[in-house]
Length: 251
Image 1 (cartoon, one colour):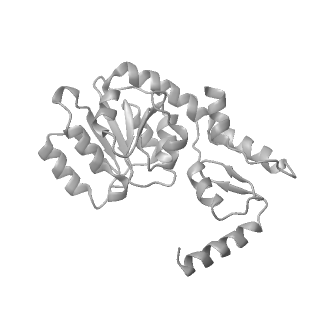
Image 2 (cartoon, one colour):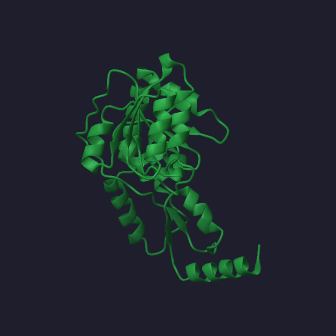
Image 3 (cartoon, rainbow, N blue to C red):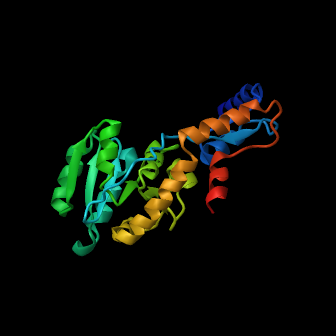
């Protein structure tokens, strides 16, 4: 560590020491804060949340369809998902639907066409339109090379979609458990096999129902109540974790 890095660490520790409590967006962020925040300052896990629509009802397509939502930039990793699908035997290839736009779109379209991957490109859409499009999907991929949180994970779960995400996505590390509501693809693991698992309708439906339950317990309404209770404590004892509380209710 350079002298400059040491000074930055000291400065950040002194700065955060002035706070009585800190909210971290996920456990990944908490671990980063813990390196610079004094041990006397509690760091609570409070994820980004989404509105949970109780009346939302998916209308899955008749054939396996996997979706992606995000900017078409290298960091979001759509190329990873395209290559994975292209490597699958034709009888196991899902269709892909891509919501989003960006500088990589033309190159990705060219690759998909040459690789024989069936893709529908929706471009940028409003949130209500995205949920309508999502209603047909069997799962959603989040192949990010890095996402500190990744709200699209929470949004997909709320729509009853299992999530197939990279282990560089903070929300997936907190909200997705393999075989329950999706799959976190670890470094070196085969993306193609992870995606192929969700071309089984029974798997998609079962894990999609679980996904809704996860989303319900970390919804904006639940999170607001949790935060209100936290702030009402004059002297908080220990660190709290909304995500851990949710999983204790589920499993």
